[in-house]
Length: 151
Image 1 (tube, helix red, strand yellow):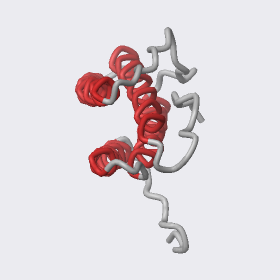
Image 2: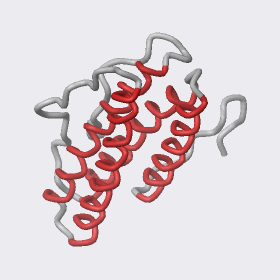
Image 3: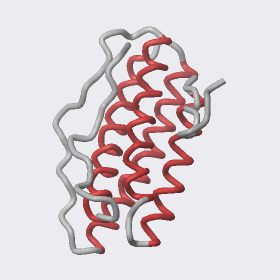
């Protein structure tokens, strides 16, 4: 299984909007890096073009989250010089890697969805939906809701 980029920290407590924003921004920074890698490493035009398109989508989200931090007089976390990449370059490995990227973004969005700030909760819900749909596009599967059997 390939390694997916992940944020370095989780918010300290539910409702902590600034920490959740920072974690979501870290995930978006990693996603941009990851999709630019996928676009360059893909051996087929469809996967490459899809990677470029998603890198662009994540750049828009990254800018939105960065601005939300600045609007709250916070300091956005720095972009890392590198993020984990898969060892393989075949289509299945890249697809699995992309699913992992989106799962990381979804996890970060959950923290936003738990923020005390209603605007951040709405943003988190939207980002969770977007990440889930992108993961499904790459062949990911939905996890059952807690308390329900998968099936």
